[in-house]
Length: 172
Image (cartoon, rainbow, N blue to C red; front, side):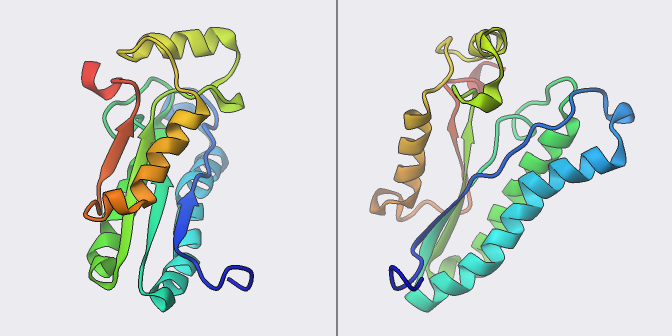
């Protein structure tokens, strides 16, 4: 805020998959780590971002969620899915509380993205098969979707989810 005079845009992009396995086998400390990284960090960020944006007359907040937990469940990913689905409740709550004050909150739901989080090549190939386009996204493609959500082109988009998942949710 000192460097730029305020806050207009925030992208909350924390994420960790956590341990993979049936929910009954996930230790409570691992559950909390996944929820803290994926959901509580978004709350903590928004808690500071909202007052800064209100001081400027509004702004746009994007939370990186996932198709996992929002449109499908994947075996062994209950903690991750619960945390990412929880982001939609956060987005809707912020919208209900602050949209009339000029703050737009939305969620971006990417499919598989070619990052370190996607795993090795075999895991990336498996993920590509889930998508209608039969590939995973380049990071730049997801960045372009985020840029849309914070741009004036999305001035009437609030409290919703934008799937940037290569048709993944459409073919489940």
